[in-house]
Length: 142
Length: 236
Image (cartoon, rainbow over all chains, first blue to last red; front, top):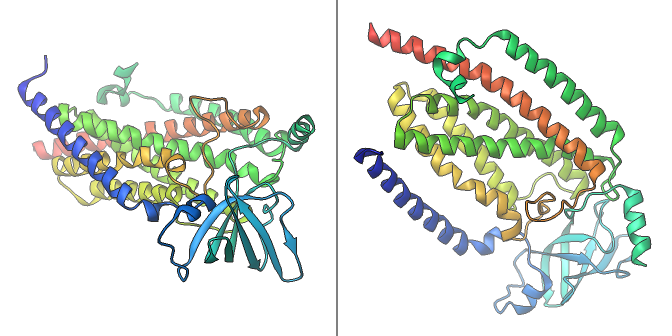
């Protein structure tokens, strides 16, 4: 049997646990806008108070067949399969940047449909497989 | 089995046990490294940089696991005042601290060729840095508070507060949009990592876990000795 002292300690600890969990939850909730690393095109579309002069990050997939390149600049479409944003960028993109893959762009919105990026990051997904398996998957999808 | 961790038993732990564990460690890590560097295939987009994962993921697991242990030990310590709890937790801390540093460094080395950047302040990476800071705080609280009882209390509180960070690290990739990818291995669904890559990952996890166990046993033995010497000194 637990002694009275031990019981009161357990009680105190459970209380402080609940309090701490609540505080952390509230803090993370109120900071959500800062915790989120990037916004999706749909979130941009639904946002009412957009600041066009502030640097933000948007992310999603690079739309298939949307990349157009010339010598110094590149433009492509970021999609979350619901809404799309056109991104233009001057500079070198990471090696893993390609169509159909995840991307995060940092820069400024010109309007809700057009984004000028100052930095492009490639986002990797949770799938890991050898090249042969990915080829086989592609074959079976087509 | 648990009895072996009681202070008097640990002192009779001979070098032979540790030597056997070291032989096991060498074998497992040799197999793991051969498998992950030579036998396992490159990834279909990342290429060979996927091989960093075989150190990065096990290190992160161990870093989180060690702090989970410290958290549980701290709770037991504050409630039941069991003498061996602080010694156990104290011995685990440097292991977890080292592995969280390894996890952050290897992750950063992987991030540069994959994402195109060494470091970003997204939820996963930031919460991992917070974990490292809690480890440092925990270790420093033992180092700088000379009174054992006082250090015990302060470090337990740090251990418990820091434990709240663990679910945040684990679920940061699901709760918020992060640059870090979501987990490939989950309890609820099949792993999204091909089995030719999963096998070396598990071998490496096993290897690093044995390494942690060896360091833990050595450190724990030292801590028990130190505790006994201090007690004797105070008694005189």
